Amino acid sequence: MKLPPLAIGAGAGLLIAALLAPATGTALGKLGAVRAERARLTAQLAAPQGAPPPLVVSGLALGGDLAASIRERARSGGVLVEELADVSPAGRLAVLRLRLSGPEKAVLALADSLERDTPLVRLRGWRLAGIEGGVRLTGEAVAVRP
Image (cartoon, rainbow, N blue to C red; front, side):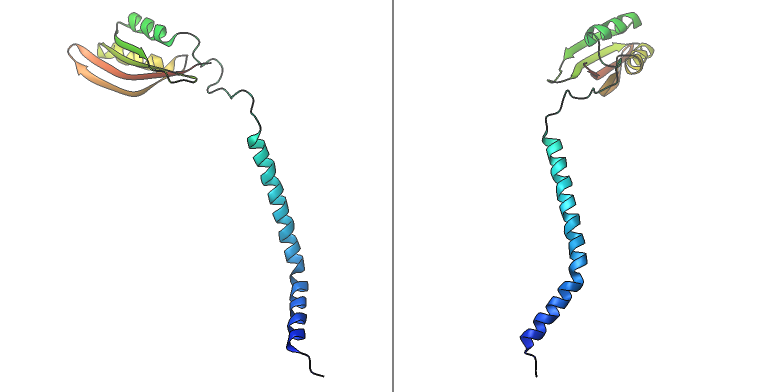
């Protein structure tokens, strides 16, 4: 008796399916686990968060008025404050546009003390230019509000 080609194809297909069944089951199991993990992470990201984490460690945030602090340091160091304007965006950063002038050593010492002492202040986009009798520092002072 001769087998029809359709029966041979169907038998071969069933045999191949039986041989590939373990690999297919493993792949489907892994796919299910990955989908469950993805759903968990998506839900975690969508959940409302508590208070935002602090930008800097405790003690380094701005505790008072940055402009008053810079004016006091400049006065005690013999540096002239030509401009000190608040250009802070909404948020937790305090940004002051400043222009200071005086003897080179005094201006550099003031800039150094701003960056080294607390509260944490960084000078951004700063520029030093020589002027008659000293130097002029222009830039922005950035600090973090608590």
